[in-house]
Image 1 (cartoon, each protein chain N blue to C red):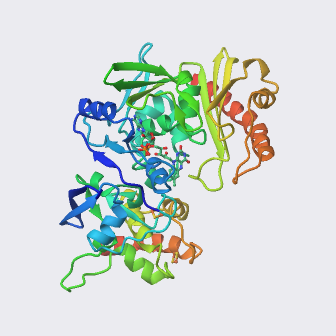
Image 2 (cartoon, helix red, strand yellow; image 1 turned 180 degrees about the horizontal axis):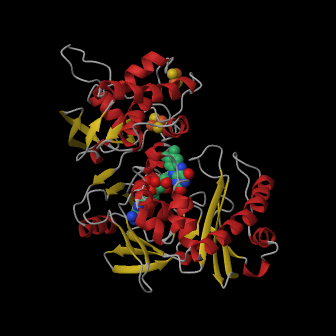
Image 3 (cartoon, chains in turn yellow, purple; image 1 turned 135 degrees about the vertical axis):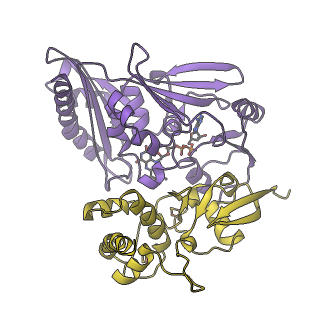
Length: 166
Length: 283
Ligand SMILES: Cc1cc2nc3c(=O)[nH]c(=O)nc-3n(C[C@H](O)[C@H](O)[C@H](O)COP(=O)(O)OP(=O)(O)OC[C@H]3O[C@@H](n4cnc5c(N)ncnc54)[C@H](O)[C@@H]3O)c2cc1C
Ligand code: FES
Ligand code: FES
């Protein structure tokens, strides 16, 4: 028996993607395979590592714990959607992306998309975090490379860049 | 791993959702998915159908009332942990809610996971089933047969098993308000803040003229169901009384002896905090 496919309209980074997926397609897989947005990474697939974190209506959510068929009413932002438009074709790095680059907030980069989305939403809620609050902001995401110190620095630097740019 | 295939419904009314569940014996409710989706992906569960309740109207509420016998917080099935935690009114009417919710997973999980879903999931390692039981709250449940209210004391059947029938939807949880003269406290030991507790302890004490007249303590991650022990008569050795009724279990996170040790350390501490809280509220 072939599996039933569902027509799903996903709103991702301001564009509409019409995809045909089985009900069991995880949102993380739909973004990567069906929308071709491979910036969202998949680590554990049970909610623990945070690599797959995307913004759903502005709030960070594990895309490996949502089905694409459940995401129909949602506005989704992936790491690809964080870059800000300017007059160049590639746009300019968002404050959080720029801070990771400045502070060596990544090594292999596997965990980075999840950190970038989580911190982007975290700084909206708390634009001027203390170091402790920066640590708390990233406590749900795992990184096997950096030892976190430079990620904490990146959070604080991103808050500064946000200020400088506004 | 990926989930096994299942049929999918995303009904727009509660009636449709209840009918779908009643028709399909292998169907399961999908709420926030923060416990169910990992179980599906690890293939520990393989329901024939998921009934996604996220499009149902009128279930996202956190409603507080401070008068009379109905005083307390009513939490709809689609209220996310984050939403309940953000309610300052709820934290005033029943402070134990916020005390415990800040330990439920990490913020990203709380953005999606529902408080009612956590209760129905009946995990003895989860904070909210124990809190509901300690506060003697209840859950309102709907099915094609009608509605009923299940008191917390009758809700938990075994590990990860509630007494709800497969075709019932929990529509609302009720947490009673903290009465005058009462105090609550919560503490847990976890490897990182936000991880499941190695042991979590909550206390509810009632005082009269500064004297403790009733004291109960609830435990997370100690036994395989949420347990509450009345320690009113053993305030000199509450942990001893509790351990006589508990059977701490060993797993990869902690040995049984370590759990018993944490019960011994945390129980008196949390009780003292709750007494302090009661006295503070009275002044
Ligand atoms: C990394 C991680 C860490 C976590 N840490 C903690 C923690 O420290 N403490 C903690 O308490 N929890 C923790 N959780 C679990 C989290 O709190 C879940 O949100 C919660 O257990 C389930 O709520 P849900 O809405 O996601 O339910 P779902 O996953 O959608 O459902 C869980 C179960 O309940 C049933 N169900 C759900 N809602 C209803 C309803 N209204 N009526 C009938 N049946 C229903 C479903 O059929 C399913 O069997 C963690 C989860 C993850 C992924
Ligand atoms: S892949 Fe989603 S949390 Fe690890
Ligand atoms: S940079 Fe390699 S896992 Fe974080």
